[in-house]
Length: 216
Length: 313
Image (tube, rainbow over all chains, first blue to last red; front, side, top):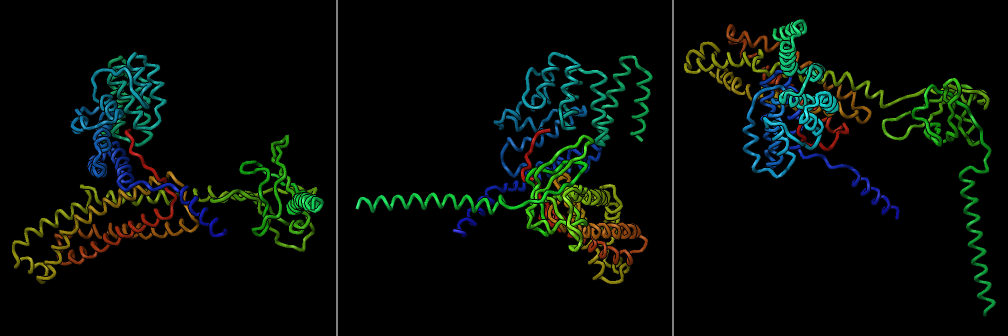
């Protein structure tokens, strides 16, 4: 009886422990994080290596819905700091995917037209941009939790011309807090253009000085 | 016959009833219902981690429980301990009370009595309780280590960057070697003998692979850093051993820096350079294997998060 109870306890403990993530997943996860971090910090050489390893790890699954996450991520990161890209590598994989989330995400970062709806964390941003309610858009952007996602959301609003100073300042503060100099540079340039076009020359000068500071 | 059955049923009922009564009394005795109790009062600035029914321990044995927790008008938390009389002897005037929040397990109040000959503790006295928070202590200890992880990772990154001294040195040295390899006589003349010239070429060719390996290690180190930041350090003893390993790795990187400086001067003094490259290779090997074993050790000791889903940003 005692042995039996020990065995039962042992199996209960075993069943409670979570299984470790497969190595491809753990590796891909960290390569993705490294890619984002190094790219945003302006270390392109490292970013490229991390991206390659991220892609290679996803490739091990042979599942297009998983593999596509690498090019989609790359495309989204470039999208977040206004680098123009046609997302070719993701586009090639799209016909093979079955997951609606991937398809919607692809449309979100490539479509030149405003979307009406979107699932997930960008839903509110997409809805408010579709009506071009700038205040609501800014609130929706602030509610997006992760730093990169905030930049993606802000970029979406800017690209669809539904933004103001606060949108750019929010994105700039996120980039700055994270030490993402490349993203900071991109948003400073947008901010400078915004101030110039709205006739706020003194603010534009200040921003220009910041751009010069980080360009040295 | 009928009377016999009635007697047996009656006896069974009486015995069952007696058994129930006996069991109830037994449980009450075990639970100290009939025991005289002593009540001691403790005070604390915070009620964090305190719960009614919490165990009070002396030398690892439970000697009582927390009966009541109250917040006074001036914001002090009063804790009332209920101690069976047989355990009251452990409570002396010089006894110290500590609220322990262990890394694993439930919080508890521990009593330590340095002098058992001291006067018994009065029930009217109020003693201040101290808190030992293992979790916060571990986090505090872990913080500098995590910072050092970052520094080590950055160190390797700098070393293995395309624009780094190491890569430039390798590039330059390889070029020289390639040129010289075309002429055995010249190579022999410069290095002293044919064997060392070949060893030098082999070593130089192997260096880019080592750089790649170092890059992989950085990446793995970053995994560990990211994971360690998310999770709290594990068992006791992990922190010092990790620290020792890190010191080792850090030291090696510092030595490597010096060697790289020497390597840059290879074109000026090829003979001396040959010697340095051999040492450099060994050092890189050692540093990489130290870092790898460090990662392995930490992975084995840390309670990492198990699932790492790949989510789109």
